[in-house]
Image (tube, rainbow, N blue to C red):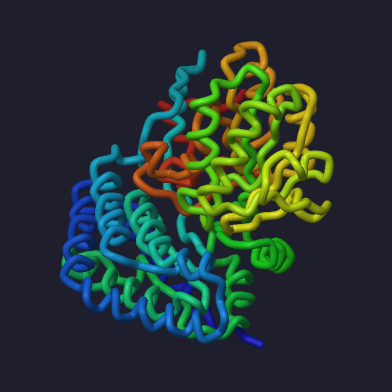
Length: 416
């Protein structure tokens, strides 16, 4: 049976050739125009988003997931701010990465080039559509977006508005496309467009990632669960520890950079540890601990084995105890998703061990795991946090959406 998305793929490939050759000034003008068009359509965007939210509530979606879906004035401002930052970033295309002059006179250059056409499959958060489109435009790529059915109305309108902005600056609307319906079978069709799509980037939960990995004929940049840990070392500063842990868990519990497991050094349990657990409870967090410390603070709940290595995406945190930094790293490497993990300590030796041995894409010292965000890394935005080890790792921003080409300049050389 023929692939129903062939026409979409053909248009994306043609559009990719245009945006790949676009000058930085035209790409930046497109981003500025997208901002203007989105701002002028705020009322329509919020109305479309409200349709998605009401539909989600009727289906019994949890408040944490509804929060991921929600657009409001402050989140729209964050979208505009991201567009502004991306617009001001250097052009990632045609950068000279290496230059070599061979003994035979050949000059070899290694230069950055776009990936081509990128398929992006994401769940819930409609701002991802803007971030992904903006990063692809700036990096000279076309993209095919597939948001979840939860954000269908929001994403469809966003892509329509982006298309209008592209048209205003003389670029093809097909640079940013979306799948034509909510039919889940179309995701499978997208994953077999190997002649038209160069990379697939899934951003979502285990079921989405597992499906994409199993079915895709196209290379995949995986964005796995955000099973993030914060380890409080025996030499942690108490003020830093409390402030950081509460932020890492409670600032926005529903994002992938939220800490899901707190690791406490057993020697600080009766002082810093007790203060942290008390503060988390007061902040409205459900705290699940091993049975041996259940009586430490009123209000704690007993943890079960399944709480470790689990992404709550809610104001719930699991707690475990270790004897040293080596045990903490072993625990993280066993139960984590190689996303983002932090150590809170003033001990340089323990810091060095943690940073060198934890296998996460992002490792932090004395900072909240919620900094796992492309904007916080100065990238303007991100398409996801890649947790694999090939090509892209950590926040997927402009540079991660490029590859390279070797350009060899000769003057009549032949190989002996």
